Length: 341
Ligand code: WQD
Image (cartoon, rainbow, N blue to C red; front, side):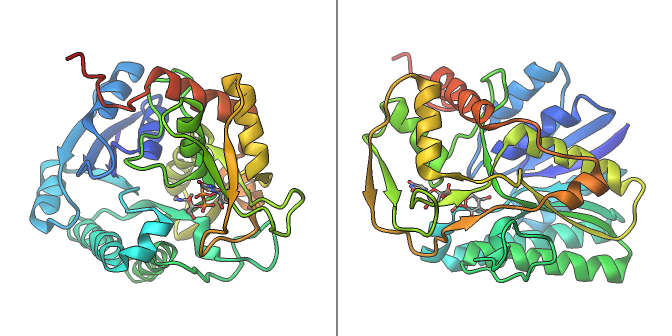
C-alpha cells in the first residue's frame, strides 16, 4: 500500500481528495496546523470512507516537527502539498505573511523531502499564476504573470519545485486549479472558510440567511452580462485529478503541469441564479465597485490533463450548487458543533 503525505490535510480540497484516495490502495498521513481547517473534517472522512488515516498537527514552519514526521512515517511514496494561505485580497493586505507562510513553509517541506529521499510530489497551484491571460481558454504554455502576492507565491513555489525536480531527479505534477466549488454528495464535508472570501461560500451564507446580501464586484466588465466570468470546477472532480496525478507519477518521470478546470465559464449573475434554483428562493444582491486585482474573465483549456491524465471534469453547474447548498443546509456552522447551551 503506497503511503502519501498530505499537507493541509484537513482542508477543503484535501478532505475531498483524501476521500477519493481512500477508495484506492493508499495509506494517508495528514499534516495540518488547523489555521483554516479543523479536526472534525478528518473524523468525517474516516466515517465516510470506513478507513483510518494518520494525523500529525504541525506547522510547516516548524522544521524539527516536520522532519520528525518523515522519520516517524518511513517509506512515504509521495506528497500532495495543499497547505497555503489562499485569499487573494488578504494577500494584498499582508503580503509578508503570505510569502513567509507559503514560500518558507514549502521550502521546509521540499528540504525535508530531500533529506528523506522522497521524490514525488503533486502541488496545489492556481490559475491565478496566469494573471490576466491574453487568450482564453488559457493553456499551460501561457505566460506566468501573477498580479497579486498570493498568485506570486504559487508561481514561486512552482519554480522552486521545477528547479529542484531537474537538480534532484524528482517527479512532480503541478495542478493549476481554476475555481473550486461544491461539496461531497453526503453533505458531510465541504468548504468552511473562516471568512467567505470567494463567491460561492458568500452566496451560500446569504442563501442561508447568515449574511444580508451579495455584493457583485462590478457589472461593467467586458462579458455577456457585465459580471465576472470564471471557470468553476466541482471539488470532487478536482479531487479525482489528484488521484490521477499520483497514478501518473508512478509511471512518468519529470515535470508535468496541468490546468484543472472545465473549460466552461459562468458569470457571477449566472452563479447567483443557479444558487437560487438550488436553494429555492431568491438571493439578495447589489452591484458594487470592482474589486482591485480582479479580471473580467478566465477559463482553462484542459486538453492536456485529458490527454495525459485521462481526466476530465464530469460534474456540471447543478451538481456544484446543489451540493454546496446541501453542505450549507446540513452544516450552518460549518464543522463547528452547534452549541447546545
Ligand atoms: C469569483 C468571481 C469576483 C466575491 C480566487 C483565486 C483562485 C482561487 C479562487 C484559491 C469574481 C466575483 C466574488 C463576491 C463577487 N483561490 N465576486 N462578489 O478571485 O476568481 O479566484 O479564488 O485557490 O486562485 O484567484 O474567485 O470567488 O473570489 O471571485 O462579485 O463577494 O466572483 O469579482 O468575478 P477568484 P472569487
